[in-house]
Amino acid sequence: MPEIIDQIFVLLKHWLMGYVPSLLKPVVSAILSVVPVLLAFPLLFAITTVLERKGLGRMQNRYGPNRVGPFGFLQPMADGIKSLTKEDIIPRTADHLVHLLAPVVIVIASFLVYAVLPIGRNMVIANLNAGVLFFFAVGSMVELSVFMAGWSSRSKYSLLGAMRAIAQMISYEIPLVLASIVVIMAAGSLSTVTIVNLQATYTGIFPHWYVFTPWGLTGFIIFMIAATAESNRCPFDLPEGESEIIAGYYIEYSGFKFALFFLGEYLGMFATSAMAITLFLGGWAAPFSFLTWIPSYVWFFAKLLALICAFIWIRGTLPRLRMDQLMNFAWKFMLPLSLINIFAAGVWHYMPAGASRWLVVTLVIAVACVLLSRGLRRNQWFHVRTYRFAS
Amino acid sequence: MLGQGILKGLAETARNFFGSYINKDRLTTVQFPEERLPQIEATRDFPFLVYDGTDWDQGMRCVSCQICEKECPPKCIYIVKSADKKPDATGKPQFYPARFDIDISVCMSCQICVEVCPFDAIKMDVDFELSTTDRFGGLLLNKQQLAKSNEYYNKIHPTEAAAVDAALADERAKADAKLRQAAEAKAAAAAAPPTPPAEKTVVQ
Image (tube, rainbow over all chains, first blue to last red; front, side, top):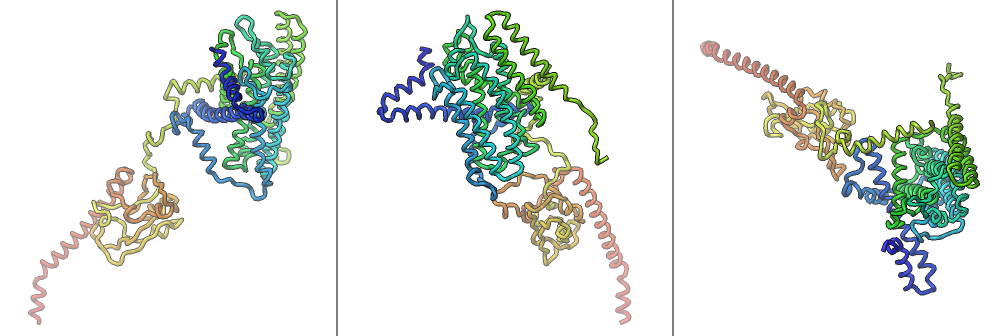
């Protein structure tokens, strides 16, 4: 019985496909796979916005939205209606076509990456044998859309925001990819389905998630920090810093195009979180072998919600970084640490299993972490600023 | 250790998050339409016209001197002076406003009209829930909408209204005394010289 509940969506699709003429099978199969994803993740976006607003409110000792519907949970509907009824203003000197395309591109790019994410056992739209590569290749389309938005708006704020966003996204994409390389090394495959299947085995009651190894934990932390920067979230929200450049690259957008940007950004955040789950947290696999009776997709969404809550928690805690701190952190700490992490993963692979490799690899990473953090701190010297020409 | 401060901050926000569910005193928000904070006495938004007694039209203190209309910086007051006179609170015949309009969409709540009014006829209101569906007509208040009783004024600004009432009572007493004096003088004059006219008649 648990197997049937676990596979219910797969079986449902097969049953429906039985009634489809063979000529239409590829098209209908694609539609049946894609439409649930197109429905589930925007719904998750709606839930996340209200959860985020309520959670942030509580962290600041406020109520958060509590007027629309029970406990304010219909707030996203009100927001959606509001953004649909708002006037769509395009600046007179803007590049109209690019201005229109930018929000479309960000949403398409964010949706495309869901093709390779295994949501449950046997539940993936396309099992590409280079799935991880596809994910990062399509994910970098977001940068294109951000720059399209910033450039076409013809506003200095949006251009500044776009330039910041590009600098930040490109800087953090390197540690993002390098952090995921350790998993590819360990799994020996670029296919997301294979990576999850390898993690869905158990020793006793404990699973073989990559996060339970020293290099996996380091990789996961680096991946999550880079993912935060990649999705322009606090504390890396310089591209849209409200107090500095108002809304950054989408300042000139209003109405539903603004909502599309918002949607694209959150979908990107879910996608990178889902990728972190796939690579490090065992995808749809249960955390203990005696919990495998709970359907795989439930585990996937539970992990996703947990990571989203972590994102919200971080957002409620940390202030925004400065541009030089952001860049120093990316290039002087994250990049060397992720390179050393790859080395550590190699050491792990070639050492015999046992306590010795745990010790050696942990030591390598810990020493690197301490030295690199000391290097980061060395440049933090404070002095009274003197103004040569003013005084 | 790198990240120590971040962990400390995360603990703090977590404490706030869970604390706000356990301890209601942490939540400082006032759930506005249901709960309201008491207004401070100096609250003000738009002017209104004070009337004494029960009849808003008869008891209106305004004598249509039009000083407020002239002083109003955004020119939101419009007054039409009456042709006839009627007795005011002290019984003196005065002009009264045939029309008194304030456009509260223009009013900037500066209180200058209140400062310049020599008759304490215009005062600041505290009613702020004035939204209407008609942004032109709905926000142009006429004489009847502006008229509010002295009791209402006493309720919203007790200290200020008490001072005004005392001053007015003082003035009224003075006026009464004057009137009485005049009446007495008249009476004395009427009582004392019944003879001169007689003399006059005699002379004639």
